[in-house]
Amino acid sequence: MVDIGTLSLIILLAMFALLAIGMPLGFASAFLAVVTLILKFDVDLLFNTFGRGPLSVLAQAVYRQMTNYVLISIPLFIFMAALLERCGIARDMYSSLNVWLARTRGGIAIVTSIMAVIMAAMSGIIGGEVVLLGLIALPQMLRLGYNQNLAIGTICASGSLGTMIPPSIVLIFYGLVTETSIKALFTASFLPGFMLASFFIIYIVVRTRISPSMAPLPEPEPDAPEGSEKALMFLGFLARMACWVVGVLIIRALFFTLTGANVPREGEDPILLGMVSDFPYLIGAFAIALATIFFVVGRERTLRGWNMGKGLVAPIVVIGVVLGSIYGGITGITEAAGMGVIAVFVIGLFRREMTFIIVWDSLMRTLKSTGTIIWVTIGAAALAAAYTLAGGPTYVANLITGADLPTMGIILIMMFIFLIMGMFMDWIGIVLLIMPVFLPIVTKLPAEEIGFFASIDARYIPIWFGVVFCMNMQVSFLSPPFGPAAFYLKSVAPPGIELTDIFKGFLPFIALQLCALSVLLMYPPIVTLFL
Image (cartoon, rainbow, N blue to C red; front, side):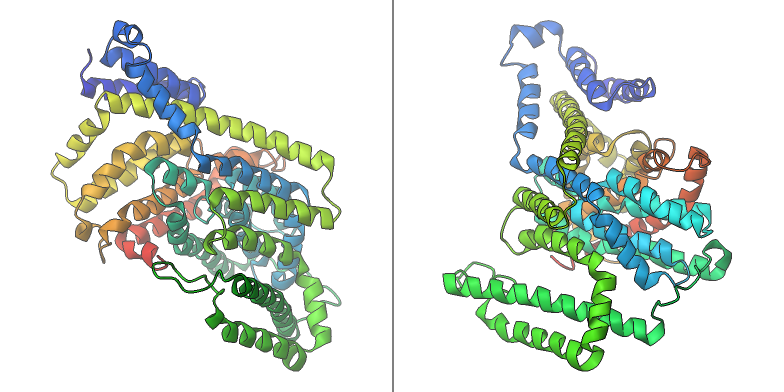
């Protein structure tokens, strides 16, 4: 029988060795799970008590993961992202954003970042975003003479925002493994996710102002509106969009009123913007939007603005369906993913772009991606169960807490481990292998000592740690030598762009990600502002 300290070292070294020779993470984890049980117990114990011994614990752990209902949302979100990529919604969204920001210094890069945020809020899939932005935005930026490093960094860093912005699959997995409320994780990650996106946009604006040659302005279109005229047209677009959104909310509130669903009940939260008391505000907002169209902007300008920005309508509808159904209390995460798929499919049919070939190809891509995730989940769940059975989490906890470090010292060591593991391992494996060990340690730390400038309520520590973990994984998507974003972009980049060029473009954006991570560590209450 091998002691747990030696066994931990063997597992760590063996994992890196197996990954280095190219063994898939799922198979490497499953293999090490069996090796762990053999080294800790013995072969006879494993098989003489078949169905009741350590192997049955592995089977139960895998079964528990694979039968979790929320897991169904992951292939649904992947399918939705595949449909979005193929049916032209993303292309039209990029064109509409480009209309409004084309004459801004660094405008194409800013459009790319905004588009990435919207796509992240629609599907939460990272690889598809990078590939799509690489196909749509990279040729455009290079054609206009944008600095190659700026273009590459913007696409890959922004395309990885699906890690942080709901409905993030990383957050869903974290919630599954740690039994944390996924809705609370989504709410907590809103502000950090948009903070990181704003860091990217601010960097683009400042960098291109300092060095205008990095982002030349395109030639103006002959009939393109300028200055105040463009601003009024954009205001008209927003006012017309507000009419539609508020109108839907009024109909929704009427439905709840007629069915009696919005009657106040003790112990139940009121329906957001669906109570009788909300009618004056909704009707007032509708009246303001109409007044803006008729008396401020004008119907003709509003119509032109709508035609210029209508490519944003479909993404807004999809986001409203997915996130609105979750936060409106209509459905859970899994049902919202299914509704998102239906919304994209129906929009594609209305646009006459949804064909059998697109659906079939999207299903095949979903099957491949889901298969990879499932095998990694099975292997990592087995290894986590075997290591737990061997006493690993207790050993690691005693090792860390016994080092007599301050609370933030322990947190920083965990952050360093996350960053290093993220360079070599897929995030799914890190969630399943590392989180069951680290989270119990963090929850036992004094809550008042977490953070440098402010502390956090003890009940929110698992949620805060999940958001911090996702920010680490955001860094890992760009970190060499195995930064996945680089390989996603390389698959669609022009022949002259090498992997070394791609990683070189990441450096300032990795620094921005580390700045955002530092904000979460220094001021943890930032994740609880909306909770």
